[in-house]
Image 1 (cartoon, rainbow, N blue to C red):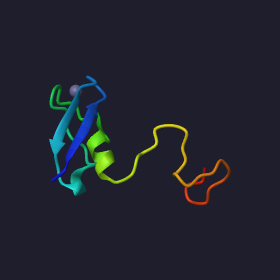
Image 2: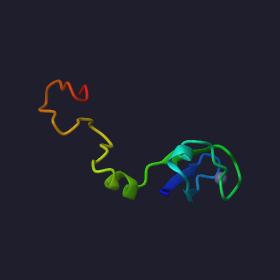
Image 3: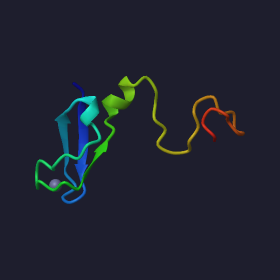
Length: 74
Ligand SMILES: [Zn+2]
């Protein structure tokens, strides 16, 4: 089971939880303040193990050559 990272919108604490892939995006209560205003963040480990780098800014899919790209739209 993968470990997912979540951040609480109420107290801004990060916490991790072991969940099945099916449950990854379902609401989870904050482990600190028990608020349900939380959302999942992609951990570094998860991004790397996915086999591709998730671009944080600038866009592009790797095959972009500066013009329009039919793969990613950039
Ligand atoms: Zn919280």
